[in-house]
Image (cartoon, rainbow, N blue to C red; front, side, top):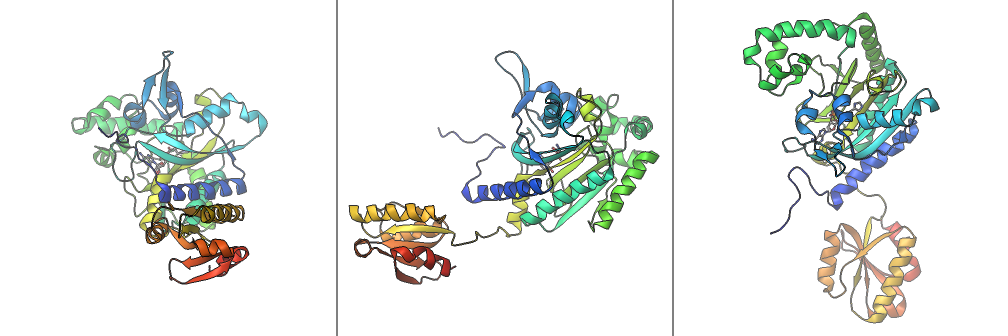
Length: 418
Ligand code: HAM
């Protein structure tokens, strides 16, 4: 029996993995420009970190985590997101002692046992940015601008940004009580999860996959306290003055409990379940609730798989610049020819020219076909004659043009042809 990849996971093959690397590279370049340092945290953590960090009545913690006990009887979980881990590391290494504000970013796999479908995987990659120590709306605006900058540089143009405020404990408490009243009236129409969460966390019903629409209809209006309202107004001012287009989306609540005030999502092709390519917001209480000093914080994460799919959908995968891949084609299997070929490819690679080749046992026609399939733009054909004369035939695989050139002129000829 053939063993296949596990449901909800996938192999990222070479053409696609290039796009993952491209987005990672753009993110790292921007991170350096915006003063973020890279952090690498473990793939699994104590289960309690996510229960306390994300909230034990969220869908992620209740239904979607990969939880296991290790040989030492410890309760562990594969990380479903990166913020809780970044906060744990921030506290564990006393990073607040080093600087008043701290900017961290990470790239890595996250794991959620959701029902797999297009754009939704059980292992997926996130690139996340977290900014600790700055309570201002300016910090929120700056991070939103960073997310947009990365996505635009990657080639995603048609994005829509939805922004909301989920307030703070002060404005949420009275709302929670009013919401409970409203939910009591429609209790019979609620799903089992919402009935169970009613006492502990009725706010989660607002983004319940089953009953959010009836809940929202019945819910009272959420009123921000004066401080949260001012923060929200400032954020809008900053976004407007930087000409960032956004929609105020009062329905946006996000699936993680740690948010306070600003929350946002960036989507492509409208706001649908799998269209969100980036999500984030402010989480001013999380550091303290995980045992650190009171520290305001704000951040976002880009879903790399979805961002790559969004670019693929618009066909704007960038072509490689320069001569691209060169394929060496051998016209015979003589030892001399192979020795000459080996020397040639080594020298070309030293000059930063990417070279591949297929099996010399194959016919020339087959080698050329394989060269095109591998995405090569040029082939360098070498036979007995070329080995003797220290030359090569440079063939443009797109136009079919070809010319014999001297060994020392290959680099120059390639540059001229591109
Ligand atoms: P999130 O909205 O849960 O936020 O995830 C961020 C992004 O990860 C989503 O917008 C989506 O693109 C991608 N994503 C989520 N689940 C999947 C999945 N099953 N398959 C493929 N892609 C997925 C967070 O995780 C927060 N930690 C973001 C944050 C950072 N907030 C503050 N700082």
